[in-house]
Figure 1 (tube, chains in turn blue, green):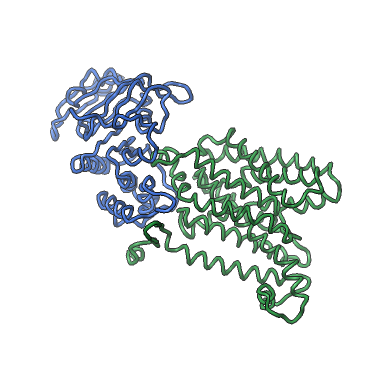
Figure 2 (cartoon, rainbow over the protein chains, first blue to last red):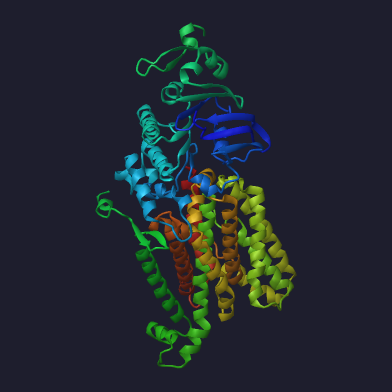
Length: 267
Length: 351
């Protein structure tokens, strides 16, 4: 088995000394798409921030290539690991090109502020996300889907092997959700990038995830391949939702159909 | 949209072996235009007064060329030029401080005068004038800097909260301004009448009677911290993306924020020490500059600086033209324009 891209050991994460996650052990498989699912407030975003060294652990470690992530210079980490937080907002009037160029920050210093490589990587990121036509437009003038692509392009310009994304499809309509997920799938397939993302939509999580991690109350409830993890019992216990699991007629992955009171005829 | 396509690359790129940088294409033209307006306003301003000097003679005198009367030398170089230079420099310092504050807090209505930093500087400076009347002018910037720093630290402790709550920041700032203002009044009440009358004119924000001594005391602060801020513009770009993104891009957030705050406080404090509380410049100039060159700080900081300088020079000129020979302090002019602008920003921001 290949070494994991990221490993958490006895990780305890807290906001203002209120622990959200306690003593968690976890390995993120390299070169795969890992999807975190779980109810609101279960600690998915907190875990993602912990893995991306945005949140200092109270105890425990996160290892990137067997080195503790907090022992590495933060710019070195930024060349290997990119993180897109939930619902980012760009400064008013910032153009798409400027936003994407911001992803080159870890490669720049006082003297080298805009190298040829920076320029090349920004162009590549704009091409992959099909945003060249919008490059000079202000980010705030774009549609939701385009805007999300612009943010992903920024993390792509960072040129990292690992990408962490917190709910990259929120606030997008279904077509744009699939567009973003397909883009991430391409990146994973063509360039072998490790992707870790938080998703709310279980069916998309099952279709796009190689590895599924279901979280409940700050702990990993189950993890593994979607077909083994996504069961009726799991959805009942993690989300408190009665459902049926069938095969997705398009992809063959598990499809979760909620029952709900309307069908049961209880008012 | 067609227009941007004809110029595919909107940046000016400088690239040598050791150095590379980029700048928004609009910046040089904008800087030149603002510079020319400022220069014109300065010449007019220096010529204006009880003893008018024609514009051409103003230029000749400053350049050291011979003029019709030898009186011009004293009037222009000794009496009026330092005043205009102070106005220009103070405007630049306040504008840079405002740009840093807004960029760092991602808060369009943050500025040193709004969050009480200027009031803290005023209190410290007035205290120095009243308690130690004989102290040389060069000490004023240090006192004001300490006052400004104290308020900045208190605001950080009490109201920062990630800078994401504009209203909280401003309410706490208003609180600090009121407390500092009350203490300043107390100082004024107990002070010696001569020192106090000087302090009062200064408090409203005026460049009246500024001499070379003030220019020389203030210039090092402006140059050192102005350039330092410019060097940090890339960090400011990262910070204005928000804490999480800046951190994930590899910014040493707390460290950079500390350096930038220090620079902003030094600029605002020394400006207040030199010309009193000229309000709203630090608020308005960054917005005007953002409209002109966009939000990237490599271009935004110098543009905002020159805009702020222009605003104060023009405000001083207007203050002297409006009810001549009576002079209005330029702080009143900037407030008359700035207060409605502040309200406009508040209303726009509420949406």
